[in-house]
Amino acid sequence: MGYVRTSRGQRLISGPRAGFAFQIDLGFFGSVNLRAKKAETMEGQRRHGRALTLTLLLLFCASVSAQDCKVFDPELQGAYAGPCKDGLAEGEGSARGVAEYRGGFRAGRKHGQGVKTWPNGDRYEGGFAEDKREGAGKYTWGTGPWRGESYEGPYVNDKRHGEGVYRWPSGDAYKGAFAEDNIVGYATPMMLARRKFEEEAKKAVAKEGQKVCREMAVGLALTEWIRGVVVGVSGEQVGVRVDEPGTHRHVVAGVELQAGDVVWDAPTQWTPCW
Image 1 (tube, rainbow, N blue to C red):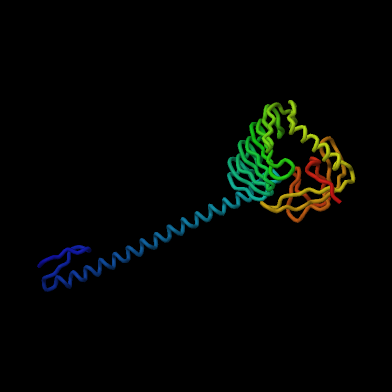
Image 2 (cartoon, rainbow, N blue to C red):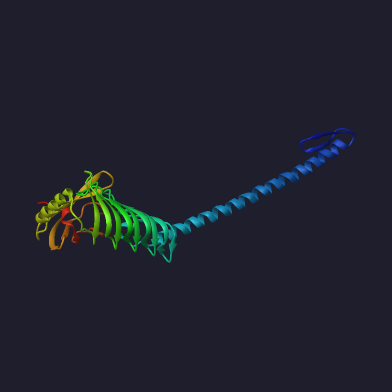
């Protein structure tokens, strides 16, 4: 009697009954192996199914959590992604609506370091506290009368306050004190020209009954005009009753525009129209 080694073990090759006996053994063990492999496969499929179900459940819970997580800024109430606590945005997250924000949240409000951008190209990067700009930050203006201008310095309660730098695209810059959002140092030539422009804009717009228009950004490259009537003047702002809010969603001075709303805004943002 002799043996030869194969990949499955030793196989009998001589003896009157050995080959037949071993063939029976091979069939038996092969059947056992097949059943074992089939059982392993089915168990693997069950494990995979349980893992997939758990994953889908977690994704669903995360989706529901994100939908139920409130952000108070009216410009950011389109969608939110990030951690949530007691139904309010909490920690590092991102939100978007008519504007976009990425950074810290606390109790549903922007808090900590973050970046907020607007469709017109305006951008603020710096500190926030209770939804207001606070601490060191930089604001850059996009389209509009302040296009390309920037301020870098401290903010207190959403206003420029302290020693900061204001720059114009021309290269002119003011470096000095700000108080309650106003420059309190010596004016540069560009600042004097700017003040003249603002006085002329206010004179043209700040009259009750004056029809006014404002150009609003739509997406990255398009714009449309909104129209209204000046119904009041208070300090450095005018109250505009919006008659034609446009065909897209727009926010002015923190208010999402609808026909009949009155918004208070800087007169330089509006132009007389008929």
